[in-house]
Image 1 (cartoon, rainbow, N blue to C red):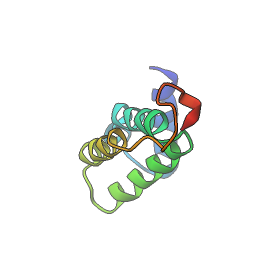
Image 2 (tube, rainbow, N blue to C red; image 1 turned 120 degrees about the horizontal axis):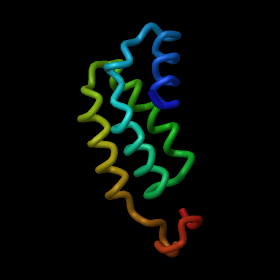
Image 3 (cartoon, one colour; image 1 turned 60 degrees about the vertical axis):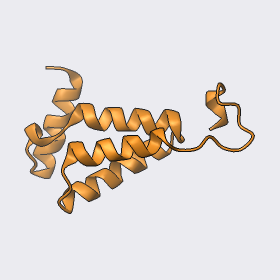
Image 4 (cartoon, helix red, strand yellow; image 1 turned 30 degrees about the horizontal axis):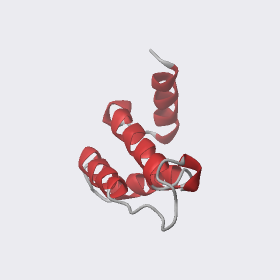
Length: 88
């Protein structure tokens, strides 16, 4: 097991959730996409919003894919240099 597996298992035990139902790669991919294509602080907030949506019945992988697509289509800020990662 990895540290991530151990952490997810511990968190799931604390929250009475099934660790097998946690789409870790999809959540990590979503956080990466938002952090790199929108803004870094948006990554944890988006992960939280994904959790809210899943709690209300959305399918996790589908919701994560939709949000990753939204991040990928997010416009670069006017005047920002797209090659400068600190410009976002």
